[in-house]
Length: 191
Image 1: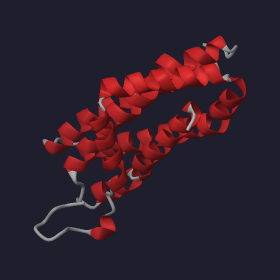
Image 2: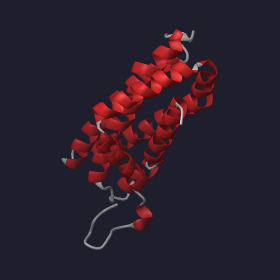
Image 3: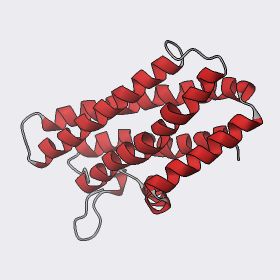
Image 4: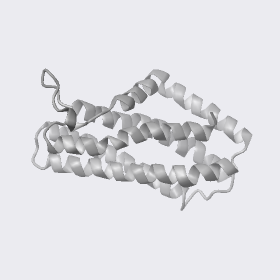
């Protein structure tokens, strides 16, 4: 697997979580939202999507693209970095909304709904742009030496994060569901 394929695989994991957000909104609307899963979602976005994936891009991948002649400002790299900043701000807002929702503050549900919808919209566009435009362009520009460097530096970042943490986040994504059709489990656990 080359470096682009690794990042594409990470997109599919992130996409699983993002695709669960409409179900989270529906669960919220029906009073069946599992706040613990929502906290796990925020942790996933902060640690896996940002600390792992976005840091791979910002600190390793984009600089190599710049070295290969892609402008560091403007489209696409500047725009993608801007979206990473927006994603960080939205995750912070999500964590605040979860806390306010837990405390049953007035308007917390509406703010939570908006934040979940904004995260879904941002990531849907962001992942598409990278998959459809940036990664194909990079495949044409990157050399074998670039790919080796990317893979080595990706592995260093993964070691710093910890393989157990990465696996835990990927397992969380694979098992995440806010599907309200499932209703309430025996014992009253909300989905």
